[in-house]
Amino acid sequence: MAVMSSAVTNPHQFLQAQNRWHWIEVAFWLATLLPFVLTPSYLSLASQIAITALFALSLDLILGYAGIVSLGHAAFFGFGAYTAGLISKWGWGEPLSGLLIAAFSAAVLGYLMSFIIARFRHLTLIMMTLGLGLLLFEVANKASWLTGGADGLQGVHMWPLLGMFRFDLYGYTAYTYALIVLFLLFLLSRRLTNSPFGLALRGIRENLTRMRAIGATSRSHIRTVYTISAAIAGVAGGLLTQTTETVSLGVVDFQRSADVLVILVLGGAGRLYGGLIGAIIFMVARDQFSGINPQYWYFPIGVLLIAVVMFLPNGILGGLARLVASWRSRSQ
Amino acid sequence: MSTPVLSTRGLDKNFGSLVVAKDIEIALPKGVRYALIGPNGAGKTTLINLITGMLQPDVGQIFLGDEEITRLGPEQRVRRGLVRTFQINTLFPNLTALEAVTLAVCERRGDAKTWWRPITAYGEVLDEAYSILTSLLLAPVCNRPTRELAYGQQRLLEIALALATRPKVLLLDEPAAGVPRDESSELFAAITSLSQDITVLFIEHDMNIVFKLASRIIVMVGGRILVEGTPAEIAADPRVREVYLGGAHHG
Ligand SMILES: Nc1ncnc2c1ncn2[C@@H]1O[C@H](COP(=O)(O)OP(=O)(O)OP(=O)(O)O)[C@@H](O)[C@H]1O
Ligand SMILES: [Mg+2]
Image 1 (cartoon, each protein chain N blue to C red):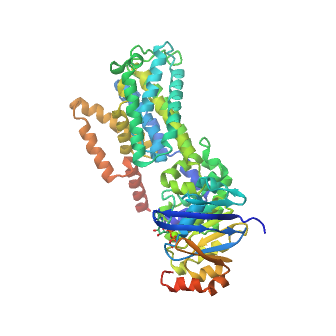
Image 2 (image 1 turned 180 degrees about the vertical axis):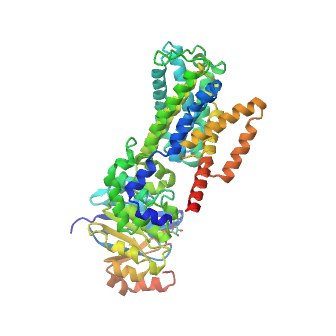
Image 3 (image 1 turned 90 degrees about the vertical axis):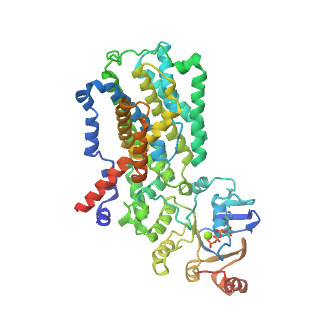
């Protein structure tokens, strides 16, 4: 009797219960430590997964919460990646400050873009973001004196993290670093989505007309979340640069924008963990299948994507949530 | 006489060759209960769209008190106290009723920009939202997603969202549209009990309700105001009878 139980719960308790940490969440974050003991030879992959997860998280804030579709999110990832790379190349290899600068520069780009983004919706918006992504790719490609173009940016060298931890060949430092940054920005995103602002974002996604009718400042909300999302994407890009000590054109290409969208849709948009789960599945699948057949590894991903979109419109996490809910209501 | 709370001067609006508003002049004094009636397609909803800024008039001016608001966006008008509801449910399907009303309260107070504090830290906002829902008998279902609410409850939520903005002028577009007549009493009780500080204009097809609730009535036909007056005047007006006996009325 769902009606009865929600009738007796007072609204404060109900919302508090929703915001509280669930034991599954705690278990999830503890499990992210397992690669250190179980698969120590895969720590580089683990760190790539954490970085991709962070990138997907940044997209989730705008797509999953505010309903703003983007086909060019790699623009911010790439901008952060190149910024972090250039700073190091020019002689400043300190990781944390480099990451902050990457975040800041991606945020500035995001803020400028947000004035255009906030004016459009639907197909126009998709084309806008796609155009931006392609534009930035061409800029990075043409400006080879700065970016190294198709050869990639050479001469990136990072100093030890906190002056103590070298970026080792096994990815021990890399994964630790990426995981901590992911966790901190996850906490920030979690706070954001549980805030009044997060509620307003969901309002924008649900019904923009009604938002106007309650006097909401939707455009300014969109600008804010877009800037934050760009900054987080920039951090992800910066992390990739710093942990691999190279930057290739791949950080801004269309493939990266498309992949992150696939990852989020697979995992389930609008629930923060969707991007994380999606990144794990996608990256592990890529690692495994491309070992078997490097050319066709997209085939199983394509099949999985079609299956998820057809049968689990809210992604894998959405499907799991529904399963748990129906199992609960049956056992009552 | 004091300035009306809401007034329009010479509003015109055409959709191509279709005239949906022609020379609309209204002036609503504070606290009155105005009914806007007229056959289907008369341009009643269009008039609300024009007044609230969801449509721009071709010609004419709109005033809220002394201030001209013709060029303001809809959300700016709402923040000045000019608020509407929709004839067709325009809600947040996946937000709970409580979340939706909380959102409206947050936007009014300027809290919706805050992203670093959890919503649970806003006890008074939640209390206010909850008490609005309680007054509209929605408290028992406040934690259910809007899309799961009964249709009549969704109509009440339309009003709850409008009230959360603390309107000075409330424009209700057929609040009971689609609600069976014997179930609409809750809706009209809610409208009757609105504070006398709020000026209300409501569109309604049911004449019994119009005559019961309205202190004045505006009759629209074909994009024009046919006549405006007290219920008694409207009831006695031969032109109004002609329109309504002409068969255009469905209510
Ligand atoms: N966006 C639009 N574009 C073109 N025509 C429109 C538009 N909106 C409304 N109309 C037309 O304008 C006329 C007035 O419509 P409106 O919705 O204002 O009528 P109404 O008085 O509210 O009718 P009802 O009682 O059926 O709600 C109708 O003929 C309608 O078809
Ligand atoms: Mg109408």
